[in-house]
Length: 457
Ligand code: ARG
Image 1 (spheres, rainbow, N blue to C red):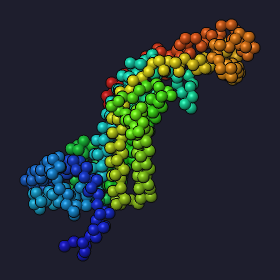
Image 2 (cartoon, rainbow, N blue to C red; image 1 turned 90 degrees about the vertical axis):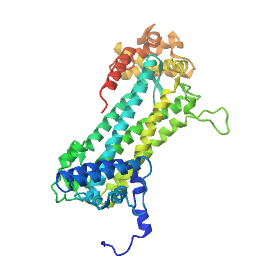
Image 3 (tube, rainbow, N blue to C red; image 1 turned 60 degrees about the vertical axis):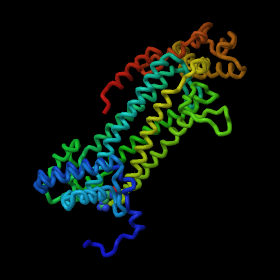
Image 4 (cartoon, rainbow, N blue to C red; image 1 turned 135 degrees about the vertical axis):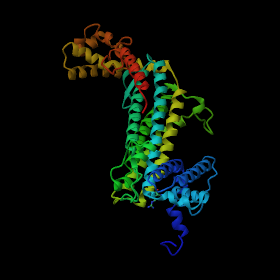
Protein backbone atom coordinates (compact mmCIF):
# COMPACT_ATOMS: atom_id res chain seq x y z
CA UNK A 1 0.00 0.00 0.00
CA UNK A 2 1.08 3.54 -0.55
CA UNK A 3 -0.27 7.00 -1.12
CA UNK A 4 -0.31 6.41 -4.87
CA UNK A 5 -2.82 4.49 -6.94
CA UNK A 6 -0.86 4.40 -10.18
CA UNK A 7 2.82 3.83 -10.92
CA UNK A 8 5.05 6.66 -11.98
CA UNK A 9 5.01 7.66 -15.60
CA UNK A 10 8.40 6.70 -17.08
CA UNK A 11 8.81 10.21 -18.37
CA UNK A 12 8.26 11.66 -14.90
CA UNK A 13 10.66 9.09 -13.56
CA UNK A 14 13.35 10.09 -16.03
CA UNK A 15 12.78 13.76 -15.35
CA UNK A 16 12.77 13.34 -11.58
CA UNK A 17 15.66 10.95 -11.11
CA UNK A 18 19.09 12.16 -10.00
CA UNK A 19 20.82 8.85 -9.46
CA UNK A 20 22.78 9.08 -12.71
CA UNK A 21 24.80 11.92 -11.20
CA UNK A 22 24.27 11.83 -7.43
CA UNK A 23 25.80 8.36 -7.53
CA UNK A 24 29.08 10.01 -6.64
CA UNK A 25 27.68 10.99 -3.25
CA UNK A 26 27.58 7.29 -2.32
CA UNK A 27 30.73 7.20 -0.13
CA UNK A 28 29.49 10.18 1.88
CA UNK A 29 25.98 8.76 2.12
CA UNK A 30 27.32 5.48 3.48
CA UNK A 31 29.54 7.24 5.99
CA UNK A 32 26.73 9.42 7.31
CA UNK A 33 24.41 6.40 7.43
CA UNK A 34 26.91 4.66 9.70
CA UNK A 35 26.99 7.66 12.04
CA UNK A 36 23.19 7.91 11.96
CA UNK A 37 22.82 4.20 12.78
CA UNK A 38 25.25 4.47 15.70
CA UNK A 39 23.23 7.41 17.01
CA UNK A 40 20.01 5.40 16.70
CA UNK A 41 21.58 2.64 18.74
CA UNK A 42 22.69 5.08 21.44
CA UNK A 43 19.13 6.46 21.47
CA UNK A 44 17.74 2.96 21.97
CA UNK A 45 15.97 2.89 18.60
CA UNK A 46 18.20 0.11 17.27
CA UNK A 47 19.52 -2.82 19.28
CA UNK A 48 23.23 -3.57 19.27
CA UNK A 49 22.53 -6.51 17.03
CA UNK A 50 20.55 -4.45 14.54
CA UNK A 51 23.29 -1.87 14.42
CA UNK A 52 25.84 -4.58 13.68
CA UNK A 53 23.69 -5.88 10.83
CA UNK A 54 23.26 -2.41 9.37
CA UNK A 55 26.97 -1.63 9.62
CA UNK A 56 27.75 -4.92 7.97
CA UNK A 57 25.30 -4.16 5.14
CA UNK A 58 26.71 -0.66 4.66
CA UNK A 59 30.23 -2.08 4.43
CA UNK A 60 29.10 -4.60 1.83
CA UNK A 61 27.53 -1.81 -0.23
CA UNK A 62 30.70 0.22 0.09
CA UNK A 63 32.65 -2.70 -1.33
CA UNK A 64 30.21 -2.97 -4.23
CA UNK A 65 30.51 0.75 -4.95
CA UNK A 66 34.31 0.65 -4.75
CA UNK A 67 34.55 -2.26 -7.15
CA UNK A 68 31.93 -0.81 -9.50
CA UNK A 69 29.64 -3.74 -8.85
CA UNK A 70 26.77 -1.77 -7.37
CA UNK A 71 23.78 -2.02 -9.68
CA UNK A 72 21.33 0.85 -9.85
CA UNK A 73 17.78 -0.39 -10.44
CA UNK A 74 15.26 1.42 -12.63
CA UNK A 75 13.15 2.32 -9.60
CA UNK A 76 16.06 4.01 -7.77
CA UNK A 77 15.27 7.72 -7.90
CA UNK A 78 18.44 8.85 -6.23
CA UNK A 79 21.50 7.40 -4.53
CA UNK A 80 19.85 7.59 -1.11
CA UNK A 81 16.97 5.36 -2.24
CA UNK A 82 19.31 3.07 -4.13
CA UNK A 83 21.43 2.46 -1.05
CA UNK A 84 18.42 1.89 1.19
CA UNK A 85 16.95 -0.53 -1.33
CA UNK A 86 20.20 -2.46 -1.55
CA UNK A 87 20.60 -2.49 2.22
CA UNK A 88 17.19 -4.09 2.65
CA UNK A 89 18.01 -6.64 -0.05
CA UNK A 90 21.18 -7.54 1.79
CA UNK A 91 20.05 -7.59 5.42
CA UNK A 92 16.26 -7.79 5.24
CA UNK A 93 13.62 -5.55 6.83
CA UNK A 94 15.97 -4.24 9.52
CA UNK A 95 17.50 -2.19 6.69
CA UNK A 96 14.27 -0.20 6.66
CA UNK A 97 14.95 0.94 10.25
CA UNK A 98 17.88 3.06 9.13
CA UNK A 99 15.61 5.81 7.87
CA UNK A 100 14.13 6.34 11.34
CA UNK A 101 14.52 9.97 12.40
CA UNK A 102 16.00 10.95 9.06
CA UNK A 103 14.62 12.43 5.87
CA UNK A 104 16.29 12.57 2.50
CA UNK A 105 16.20 16.32 3.03
CA UNK A 106 18.66 16.39 5.92
CA UNK A 107 20.44 13.42 4.38
CA UNK A 108 21.19 15.07 1.04
CA UNK A 109 22.18 18.35 2.70
CA UNK A 110 24.65 16.39 4.83
CA UNK A 111 26.11 14.51 1.86
CA UNK A 112 26.52 17.76 -0.01
CA UNK A 113 28.28 19.41 2.93
CA UNK A 114 30.64 16.43 3.20
CA UNK A 115 31.31 16.51 -0.54
CA UNK A 116 31.98 20.25 -0.53
CA UNK A 117 34.28 19.91 2.44
CA UNK A 118 36.31 17.14 0.79
CA UNK A 119 36.66 18.98 -2.49
CA UNK A 120 37.46 22.33 -0.92
CA UNK A 121 40.36 20.50 0.67
CA UNK A 122 41.42 19.04 -2.70
CA UNK A 123 41.19 22.45 -4.37
CA UNK A 124 43.25 24.02 -1.58
CA UNK A 125 45.86 21.29 -1.93
CA UNK A 126 46.03 21.58 -5.71
CA UNK A 127 46.31 25.37 -5.47
CA UNK A 128 49.12 24.83 -2.98
CA UNK A 129 50.97 22.58 -5.44
CA UNK A 130 50.64 25.11 -8.22
CA UNK A 131 51.94 27.81 -5.87
CA UNK A 132 54.95 25.63 -5.07
CA UNK A 133 55.68 25.15 -8.77
CA UNK A 134 55.37 28.86 -9.52
CA UNK A 135 57.68 29.67 -6.63
CA UNK A 136 60.30 27.17 -7.81
CA UNK A 137 60.26 28.73 -11.27
CA UNK A 138 60.37 32.24 -9.82
CA UNK A 139 63.41 31.32 -7.72
CA UNK A 140 65.19 29.99 -10.78
CA UNK A 141 64.50 33.21 -12.73
CA UNK A 142 64.81 35.76 -9.98
CA UNK A 143 66.96 38.25 -11.93
CA UNK A 144 65.58 37.86 -15.45
CA UNK A 145 64.31 41.25 -16.63
CA UNK A 146 61.22 41.49 -18.78
CA UNK A 147 58.80 44.26 -19.62
CA UNK A 148 55.87 44.65 -17.30
CA UNK A 149 52.68 45.56 -19.10
CA UNK A 150 49.57 47.62 -18.68
CA UNK A 151 46.98 47.48 -21.45
CA UNK A 152 49.37 44.92 -22.95
CA UNK A 153 51.63 47.86 -23.81
CA UNK A 154 55.15 47.82 -22.46
CA UNK A 155 55.05 49.83 -19.25
CA UNK A 156 58.00 49.39 -16.90
CA UNK A 157 60.55 46.62 -16.62
CA UNK A 158 60.10 43.98 -13.93
CA UNK A 159 61.81 40.73 -13.05
CA UNK A 160 60.21 37.52 -14.25
CA UNK A 161 60.12 36.28 -10.66
CA UNK A 162 58.10 39.31 -9.67
CA UNK A 163 55.59 38.65 -12.41
CA UNK A 164 55.26 34.95 -11.59
CA UNK A 165 54.79 35.74 -7.91
CA UNK A 166 51.79 37.89 -8.81
CA UNK A 167 50.09 34.65 -9.81
CA UNK A 168 51.39 32.97 -6.64
CA UNK A 169 49.69 35.48 -4.31
CA UNK A 170 46.40 35.16 -6.13
CA UNK A 171 46.46 31.44 -5.60
CA UNK A 172 47.25 31.96 -1.96
CA UNK A 173 44.05 33.98 -1.62
CA UNK A 174 42.24 31.17 -3.44
CA UNK A 175 43.60 28.68 -0.96
CA UNK A 176 42.36 30.83 1.91
CA UNK A 177 38.94 31.10 0.26
CA UNK A 178 38.67 27.32 0.06
CA UNK A 179 39.52 27.12 3.75
CA UNK A 180 36.57 29.42 4.41
CA UNK A 181 34.33 27.22 2.29
CA UNK A 182 35.35 24.28 4.47
CA UNK A 183 34.31 26.21 7.54
CA UNK A 184 30.98 27.12 5.90
CA UNK A 185 30.34 23.44 5.22
CA UNK A 186 31.09 22.32 8.74
CA UNK A 187 27.62 22.70 10.31
CA UNK A 188 25.81 19.39 10.48
CA UNK A 189 22.30 19.35 8.91
CA UNK A 190 21.68 15.71 9.91
CA UNK A 191 19.03 15.34 12.60
CA UNK A 192 16.86 18.10 11.15
CA UNK A 193 14.47 15.61 9.55
CA UNK A 194 12.29 16.79 6.69
CA UNK A 195 12.28 20.37 7.98
CA UNK A 196 10.94 20.54 11.53
CA UNK A 197 13.21 18.23 13.48
CA UNK A 198 12.34 14.68 14.51
CA UNK A 199 10.38 13.10 17.35
CA UNK A 200 13.36 11.19 18.73
CA UNK A 201 15.91 12.78 20.98
CA UNK A 202 18.72 12.42 18.52
CA UNK A 203 22.24 13.05 19.68
CA UNK A 204 23.20 15.47 16.96
CA UNK A 205 26.39 16.59 18.70
CA UNK A 206 27.54 12.98 18.79
CA UNK A 207 26.87 12.60 15.06
CA UNK A 208 28.73 15.85 14.41
CA UNK A 209 31.74 14.48 16.26
CA UNK A 210 31.47 11.16 14.48
CA UNK A 211 31.43 12.84 11.06
CA UNK A 212 34.01 15.51 11.97
CA UNK A 213 31.62 18.45 11.66
CA UNK A 214 32.51 21.44 13.84
CA UNK A 215 28.96 21.99 15.14
CA UNK A 216 25.31 21.23 14.47
CA UNK A 217 23.10 23.55 12.43
CA UNK A 218 20.94 25.58 14.80
CA UNK A 219 17.71 25.66 12.80
CA UNK A 220 16.20 22.63 11.10
CA UNK A 221 14.38 24.69 8.43
CA UNK A 222 17.60 26.48 7.54
CA UNK A 223 19.60 23.26 7.68
CA UNK A 224 17.61 21.34 5.06
CA UNK A 225 17.47 24.24 2.63
CA UNK A 226 20.89 25.77 3.16
CA UNK A 227 23.14 25.51 0.11
CA UNK A 228 25.28 28.54 0.95
CA UNK A 229 28.33 26.34 1.15
CA UNK A 230 27.74 25.20 -2.44
CA UNK A 231 27.51 28.83 -3.54
CA UNK A 232 30.66 29.52 -1.54
CA UNK A 233 32.51 26.69 -3.22
CA UNK A 234 31.35 27.78 -6.67
CA UNK A 235 32.31 31.35 -5.93
CA UNK A 236 35.80 30.40 -4.72
CA UNK A 237 36.14 28.05 -7.69
CA UNK A 238 35.02 30.74 -10.15
CA UNK A 239 37.60 33.16 -8.78
CA UNK A 240 40.34 30.54 -8.81
CA UNK A 241 39.47 29.45 -12.36
CA UNK A 242 39.48 33.09 -13.43
CA UNK A 243 43.02 33.37 -12.06
CA UNK A 244 44.01 30.29 -14.03
CA UNK A 245 42.44 31.80 -17.13
CA UNK A 246 44.64 34.86 -16.72
CA UNK A 247 47.69 32.66 -16.37
CA UNK A 248 46.61 30.69 -19.45
CA UNK A 249 45.95 33.85 -21.42
CA UNK A 250 49.45 35.06 -20.69
CA UNK A 251 51.05 31.80 -21.75
CA UNK A 252 49.16 32.03 -25.05
CA UNK A 253 50.61 35.49 -25.68
CA UNK A 254 54.08 34.79 -24.35
CA UNK A 255 54.52 31.61 -26.36
CA UNK A 256 53.56 33.32 -29.62
CA UNK A 257 56.23 33.94 -32.24
CA UNK A 258 55.65 37.67 -31.79
CA UNK A 259 56.53 37.66 -28.09
CA UNK A 260 58.74 34.59 -27.97
CA UNK A 261 59.13 34.88 -24.18
CA UNK A 262 58.72 31.17 -23.61
CA UNK A 263 58.31 27.92 -25.41
CA UNK A 264 55.76 25.29 -24.51
CA UNK A 265 56.59 21.79 -23.38
CA UNK A 266 56.04 19.38 -26.28
CA UNK A 267 54.10 17.16 -23.93
CA UNK A 268 51.64 19.97 -23.32
CA UNK A 269 51.06 21.32 -26.80
CA UNK A 270 49.46 20.04 -29.95
CA UNK A 271 50.16 20.29 -33.65
CA UNK A 272 47.99 21.38 -36.52
CA UNK A 273 46.36 18.89 -38.87
CA UNK A 274 47.41 20.95 -41.86
CA UNK A 275 50.26 23.30 -40.90
CA UNK A 276 53.32 21.23 -40.00
CA UNK A 277 55.14 24.11 -38.33
CA UNK A 278 52.47 24.75 -35.70
CA UNK A 279 52.80 24.13 -31.99
CA UNK A 280 49.61 25.26 -30.36
CA UNK A 281 49.09 26.29 -26.73
CA UNK A 282 45.84 24.31 -26.37
CA UNK A 283 46.19 23.76 -22.64
CA UNK A 284 46.69 27.46 -22.00
CA UNK A 285 43.74 28.31 -24.23
CA UNK A 286 41.53 25.83 -22.41
CA UNK A 287 42.53 27.28 -19.05
CA UNK A 288 41.37 30.59 -20.45
CA UNK A 289 38.05 29.17 -21.61
CA UNK A 290 37.15 26.91 -18.67
CA UNK A 291 36.68 29.73 -16.18
CA UNK A 292 33.41 31.12 -17.58
CA UNK A 293 31.94 27.65 -17.39
CA UNK A 294 32.43 27.64 -13.61
CA UNK A 295 31.17 31.20 -13.36
CA UNK A 296 28.11 29.95 -15.25
CA UNK A 297 27.52 27.23 -12.67
CA UNK A 298 27.67 29.84 -9.91
CA UNK A 299 25.18 32.07 -11.71
CA UNK A 300 22.92 29.08 -12.39
CA UNK A 301 22.79 28.04 -8.74
CA UNK A 302 21.98 31.60 -7.73
CA UNK A 303 19.12 31.27 -10.20
CA UNK A 304 17.96 28.00 -8.65
CA UNK A 305 17.95 29.45 -5.14
CA UNK A 306 16.47 32.80 -6.07
CA UNK A 307 13.06 33.37 -4.49
CA UNK A 308 12.81 29.77 -3.28
CA UNK A 309 10.38 29.44 -0.38
CA UNK A 310 11.61 27.56 2.69
CA UNK A 311 12.31 24.77 3.28
CA UNK A 312 13.21 21.88 0.96
CA UNK A 313 12.08 22.15 -2.66
CA UNK A 314 12.98 19.74 -5.43
CA UNK A 315 14.69 22.65 -7.15
CA UNK A 316 17.54 21.97 -4.75
CA UNK A 317 18.35 18.77 -6.62
CA UNK A 318 19.65 21.09 -9.34
CA UNK A 319 22.60 22.05 -7.15
CA UNK A 320 24.46 18.87 -7.97
CA UNK A 321 25.45 18.92 -11.60
CA UNK A 322 26.64 22.51 -11.28
CA UNK A 323 28.77 21.62 -8.31
CA UNK A 324 30.11 18.36 -9.73
CA UNK A 325 31.08 19.84 -13.06
CA UNK A 326 32.72 22.80 -11.32
CA UNK A 327 34.72 20.44 -9.09
CA UNK A 328 35.88 18.31 -12.00
CA UNK A 329 36.69 21.32 -14.16
CA UNK A 330 38.60 23.15 -11.46
CA UNK A 331 40.59 20.17 -10.21
CA UNK A 332 41.63 19.24 -13.73
CA UNK A 333 42.46 22.87 -14.56
CA UNK A 334 44.66 23.26 -11.48
CA UNK A 335 46.59 20.12 -12.39
CA UNK A 336 46.89 21.11 -16.05
CA UNK A 337 48.07 24.62 -15.11
CA UNK A 338 50.79 23.14 -12.96
CA UNK A 339 52.02 20.72 -15.63
CA UNK A 340 51.95 23.51 -18.20
CA UNK A 341 53.97 26.06 -16.25
CA UNK A 342 56.39 23.42 -15.03
CA UNK A 343 57.32 22.66 -18.62
CA UNK A 344 57.68 26.24 -19.87
CA UNK A 345 61.11 27.24 -21.03
CA UNK A 346 61.72 30.96 -20.74
CA UNK A 347 63.90 32.84 -23.20
CA UNK A 348 66.14 35.24 -21.39
CA UNK A 349 67.40 36.94 -24.54
CA UNK A 350 63.93 37.77 -25.85
CA UNK A 351 62.70 39.07 -22.53
CA UNK A 352 65.86 41.08 -21.85
CA UNK A 353 65.79 42.66 -25.30
CA UNK A 354 62.19 43.75 -24.81
CA UNK A 355 62.93 45.01 -21.30
CA UNK A 356 65.88 47.07 -22.53
CA UNK A 357 63.50 49.34 -24.47
CA UNK A 358 64.52 52.74 -23.10
CA UNK A 359 61.02 54.12 -23.28
CA UNK A 360 60.30 51.86 -20.31
CA UNK A 361 62.52 54.22 -18.31
CA UNK A 362 60.38 57.27 -19.06
CA UNK A 363 58.84 57.30 -15.58
CA UNK A 364 62.31 57.22 -14.07
CA UNK A 365 63.30 60.27 -16.12
CA UNK A 366 60.18 62.06 -14.89
CA UNK A 367 61.01 61.05 -11.30
CA UNK A 368 64.49 62.52 -11.77
CA UNK A 369 62.94 65.84 -12.78
CA UNK A 370 60.71 65.64 -9.70
CA UNK A 371 63.81 65.25 -7.53
CA UNK A 372 65.03 68.48 -9.13
CA UNK A 373 61.94 70.32 -8.04
CA UNK A 374 59.68 69.95 -11.09
CA UNK A 375 56.07 69.07 -10.16
CA UNK A 376 55.30 65.53 -11.35
CA UNK A 377 52.54 66.56 -13.80
CA UNK A 378 54.91 69.00 -15.50
CA UNK A 379 57.71 66.42 -15.53
CA UNK A 380 55.32 63.94 -17.15
CA UNK A 381 54.70 66.43 -19.98
CA UNK A 382 58.39 67.20 -20.45
CA UNK A 383 59.35 63.54 -20.71
CA UNK A 384 56.38 62.96 -23.01
CA UNK A 385 57.84 65.52 -25.43
CA UNK A 386 61.25 63.79 -25.27
CA UNK A 387 59.59 60.45 -26.04
CA UNK A 388 57.61 61.92 -28.91
CA UNK A 389 60.65 63.57 -30.44
CA UNK A 390 62.63 60.34 -30.23
CA UNK A 391 59.79 58.08 -31.41
CA UNK A 392 58.86 60.36 -34.31
CA UNK A 393 62.39 60.12 -35.65
CA UNK A 394 62.80 56.42 -34.92
CA UNK A 395 65.38 56.93 -32.20
CA UNK A 396 65.85 55.74 -28.62
CA UNK A 397 65.91 58.31 -25.80
CA UNK A 398 69.69 58.00 -25.52
CA UNK A 399 70.00 58.98 -29.18
CA UNK A 400 68.53 62.45 -28.62
CA UNK A 401 71.19 65.09 -29.01
CA UNK A 402 72.30 67.56 -26.43
CA UNK A 403 70.55 70.53 -28.02
CA UNK A 404 67.24 68.72 -28.18
CA UNK A 405 67.49 67.79 -24.53
CA UNK A 406 68.56 71.29 -23.52
CA UNK A 407 65.60 72.73 -25.42
CA UNK A 408 62.91 70.30 -24.22
CA UNK A 409 64.16 69.46 -20.72
CA UNK A 410 66.80 71.92 -19.56
CA UNK A 411 66.38 70.71 -15.97
CA UNK A 412 67.95 67.37 -16.91
CA UNK A 413 71.38 68.87 -17.41
CA UNK A 414 74.07 67.08 -19.35
CA UNK A 415 74.11 63.61 -17.87
CA UNK A 416 70.66 63.35 -16.31
CA UNK A 417 68.90 61.51 -19.09
CA UNK A 418 71.70 59.04 -19.69
CA UNK A 419 71.96 58.29 -15.95
CA UNK A 420 68.25 57.64 -15.58
CA UNK A 421 68.07 55.11 -18.38
CA UNK A 422 71.44 53.44 -18.27
CA UNK A 423 71.98 49.76 -17.54
CA UNK A 424 69.47 48.10 -15.26
CA UNK A 425 68.98 51.36 -13.41
CA UNK A 426 65.35 51.73 -14.22
CA UNK A 427 64.39 48.26 -13.06
CA UNK A 428 66.27 48.30 -9.77
CA UNK A 429 65.03 51.78 -8.99
CA UNK A 430 61.64 50.40 -7.86
CA UNK A 431 62.69 50.00 -4.27
CA UNK A 432 59.33 50.34 -2.59
CA UNK A 433 58.04 47.36 -0.61
CA UNK A 434 56.42 44.94 -3.05
CA UNK A 435 58.29 46.59 -5.94
CA UNK A 436 60.53 45.02 -8.53
CA UNK A 437 64.02 46.10 -7.36
CA UNK A 438 66.01 42.89 -7.01
CA UNK A 439 66.44 43.07 -3.22
CA UNK A 440 62.68 43.54 -2.93
CA UNK A 441 62.04 40.57 -5.21
CA UNK A 442 64.36 38.44 -3.10
CA UNK A 443 62.51 39.59 0.00
CA UNK A 444 59.23 38.62 -1.68
CA UNK A 445 60.58 35.22 -2.66
CA UNK A 446 61.34 34.46 0.96
CA UNK A 447 57.90 35.76 2.04
CA UNK A 448 56.41 33.41 -0.51
CA UNK A 449 58.47 30.48 0.79
CA UNK A 450 57.22 31.29 4.25
CA UNK A 451 53.60 31.50 3.06
CA UNK A 452 53.94 28.17 1.37
CA UNK A 453 55.27 26.48 4.49
CA UNK A 454 52.37 27.75 6.59
CA UNK A 455 50.04 24.87 7.21
CA UNK A 456 47.65 24.44 4.32
CA UNK A 457 44.04 24.50 5.51
N1 ARG B 1 17.57 13.69 -4.84
C1 ARG B 1 17.08 14.68 -3.91
C2 ARG B 1 17.95 15.94 -4.00
O1 ARG B 1 18.98 15.84 -4.53
C3 ARG B 1 17.14 14.16 -2.54
C4 ARG B 1 16.15 14.78 -1.62
C5 ARG B 1 14.80 14.39 -2.00
N2 ARG B 1 13.85 14.87 -1.06
C6 ARG B 1 12.56 14.93 -1.36
N3 ARG B 1 11.77 15.40 -0.45
N4 ARG B 1 12.11 14.60 -2.54
O2 ARG B 1 17.57 17.01 -3.58
